[in-house]
Image: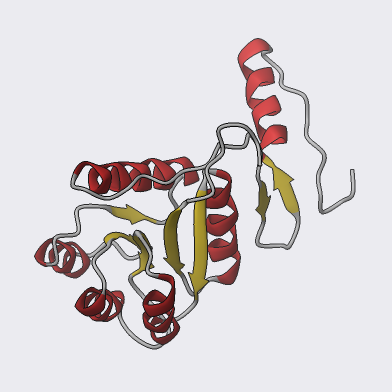
Length: 181
């Protein structure tokens, strides 16, 4: 174990039916020092929450078998945790339902992964302030991001491009993973 690294991690459950997005969220949040479990539908999320007992749940509003609020209400009957609602359908129904359930954090797809991590850290820090124990491990610098076409891109490569854009007027072209160049 690396110096300063904790064995206890903040536990986050991601409930998202889009498998590629769910995997990207999982990898990114793990790099941010969280222990992450995935569920791809409401029923499996409810069952997983009983076993995993997450500190926070990232919950998609539209799931194949039920609405996200049904999942939230059922999980809350047995377990107290924080929720971040994610949705690609920003409607007044979603906003009002979230407000009625005390959900203050809604992210509309697409959202920056860093925004999700910041939102979760804020929620977990609030839990710590109310008596929960903070559990984090050291952050890593890079994580792979799987694209919808199945290719992988590393953060380091995107950061290099960003740094080059800041220094140069004409940034260098990145290799196209689809063409192999």
